[in-house]
Length: 346
Image 1 (spheres, one colour):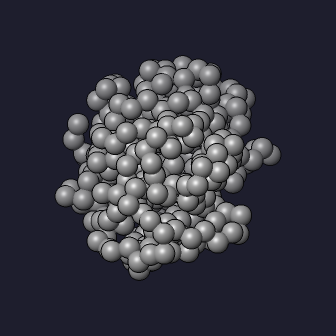
Image 2 (cartoon, rainbow, N blue to C red; image 1 turned 30 degrees about the horizontal axis):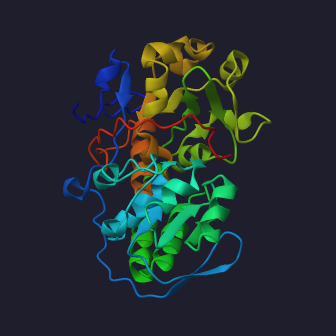
């Protein structure tokens, strides 16, 4: 698969060969540091470190020699901060960087078990409030493990805030601030870039996990944030329903999206483009009629981690073919690790 840039009404950045026909274009995701991703920030932890968790409690971290991140975006952040060598296990949503894939798995971030985590003898466990279930988090604390649970913020300020909090918790606050600032700089550049275009395509984000889970993103969602930051109009946000809600033919036709934005795993779960078009109502939308589909690797699109600025940049290119230049990062192939079906955070 090779990255390419087209000049169609919706910029679609690389053919997704496994799902030919060529009506689908695979948007770009990020490769390891040697291929252009943000280099890991080398830093020596200063401990003990204190960070405020989601409940407003001050958590003291004294040892970061054996770290277990509970979420993929937090694992990615730890590697980007230069502490990847201290990570002893990850959940299956940790699709990036490649080094994270080789580590033992503790399950899926929303369906964890205390036994598997404790068996890895972590000195600190760090995740966001989406990790759980809550009783597992309580079991870890009862077992004497230092647990840091951070808030989820799915606005554009969320990824820099999360990066700084992770850096603070692990004793590398300066590295965290440097990495967060780089994300903020990229977002500011994309904002200026998007301000130069006149088009505002109507975009529908579909969260799909086979036939059992097919949802449309409304307001207050991570997808809504990405679409708006990239200069699109979230067609699903016009519904009275916030969060993610079931797809119906009537809702799709009424939304009238010009672009359909999906995640790779979701596209694969319905058998590719043919399966996507078979979902009732999609073929009758402008996006379906014109085969305007954009697919990104899951963690890259909605991970809200260190690559968030690059994500918004590349989604903006996909929405606005009139913009010059190519994607920030060449296509990254992802992984064949199965991600359990789960509803996204609203």
